[in-house]
Length: 634
Image (tube, rainbow, N blue to C red; front, top):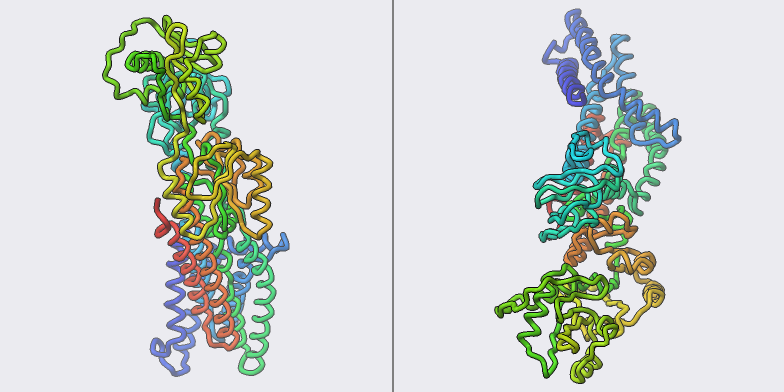
């Protein structure tokens, strides 16, 4: 509909321009004042009015409605200035048409309406592109689902899904709602939410998230959350809300724009009165209209929000959820970053750091027995043992079935694999050399292997550091950031950065308060679960973790794929965004200052003023678009 109105308006405006040129050009109908000249002039005036009225109706009426709404709310906006300018040009022109004397300025009003509409259409288009990634996410969910009534499948629209429904999802289909797996183990691709390429193994009872992909055979799950309240929808909703959040620069621009309107009206009336008295009232009218049109603070109004829109949308496309423009502004000024260790700088997944075998035990027997038992379990420690022993080529001598004892360990015949506590409960003895080794090591966790009535080996586990953590911290340090690693672990191995171990949550809070008392802007990076108090106390909270945790998190920034490289990338993006905002505001202020000065001196034609106002807005649009087009890449 907008395209139709705009197309008709452009066609009519071209005709208005043609007839106006004829009226202003003596070469068309001669310079002599004759009956033919007067007749042609009268016809052209009415034709100009005839073609100008559709433009006024198609484009001017929506503008008038918006201006009236803002006046009723007591918040005059740029539409009021535009309505005043257009109304003045049409009023003067219609008086000239019906009085059959005087110049007409229909082309001014028509050009203003067309240029403003085109400019706002471009602005809306660019804003829509900034949210295009979110639109694609919303469209990933299927339109229909297959629910089970007994063994019978019933297909119905997704919008009619209800909590408790049993839903069948075939291989290659996306999971339509958040739910719980019911029937069998499955492999699910959660890259959409977590960014991780590895498939996630799901057991009956494990949660499933809307938008993720079932890569295995058909599965059945029970709906626990309606689609509109699910993980994917909630994340999209958070980003859209963030794009509407106003930061310091945008709030300042809004306050200035409210004062700008009465100032411009006073300046326009002053220019009208001065030139009307010193030159002619028609010159005064043109000067007043030029002031109103050139001063329309469209560029000022979009200088900040458009840049923030692009930055937040660009971050979302890189799986970084930013909860508002104010967060980006604070992030651009961060001076010190505090990192939690466990789950942030480490993967949170244990690895076998060392295998200690008793002096009297057979090493090969211990390794093959441990691998046999661990292969039968999906526990994280069992998986770590399997990975540690993956290159062993010795044949497996055990054929008996492995039994799992929840909370304790694994057993097959006279072989046991489990915790120290379980060994003590069974009163299984530890050889002296293994007891001595246990007293000297500081492991994240320990798993024991027992043959018959004695422990023959122990597996010492450690957390695996994220492969990118050293490079990321070095990059941040080179950028001038202060860095501190905070952890509850009492024994931290020496690192190249300041570390503080053995901290309770309240001690982390006290440390953050000390940094902030030094007038530093502090960001806290944590896993979003155990670090809640510290995250809340920081100026910018950056939460690591998967999409399901992030959807319920209140941190200012959420990294959906837990990639530490996103942090320096995001800080660069925030600084670039603030830089673009300052450039936009500087341009808008300079443009209005120069334009109003020229208009007050009657040195600016209203048509030129309208064109310059639109070009100013387009410059701001193009500068903001650079954030997504030329922004930092991951």
